[in-house]
Image: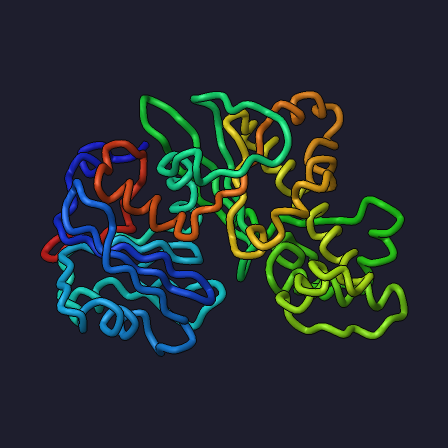
Length: 343
């Protein structure tokens, strides 16, 4: 159970919030509890050797001196040295305090922040995919194919929203159809496994496309997700078209499985760069068909709404909502908060 005393303790402003992904790091500053985030900065992680250098360049050199930093990172938060899953950066909160002059450092999982965004964002930032009406207090799931595949849950209890971070993007995914069985032997594996992240992220889309080409005995013409999605948009390549269709189908299957885990009558929320680029494909019917094909629970699945979160900085919106009013959320900070002069 979250430490409510800790949760009720407001963070000191200015607060630097940061969404640290595998490819990009996005920063903003909250100057007080009432104003919106300002001083936005987006940097490529590959351009800086450390996160401290990125913060110094993007924020401190502009004359901004945050007292608190709330970060969301792509990877599990465990200990004083936090390695990111798809990036060479290591977050060292104590060193950050000493080197950057920040008094209070909080580090959350990046999809924990995406889960917070589910209740922080308004309807104008949600595009519904298929039928269903959300139940106000029921469980929710957020998942996002981007550099990797992030997953988190969100449950409501005792009057607060509680994000449930995890590594659900690494669940096993197997073939179902005859076409799957033709394609899956050609998929690249990690230590013998085909996980969700081997299919449902940028490199996963490339993995699917190459496997389709191999199954067809065709030469792979494209090497990047952008090239594949571009060919799909132009309808200029049959294998690229099928790769997107399969990507959408597999995303529907995994999203449906996670919806069952959390019985997400409050909705399933899609985010991440890949999903947002192929929203028209999500509307074509393959996604919902795969999502709802969960016998004996198909009838229940048809009532669960799915949304694409269209806000370009959704995780920052979630972090801002939490940093300004931590008492609204059941975020456990034990072992994930470092305060100057404290534990």
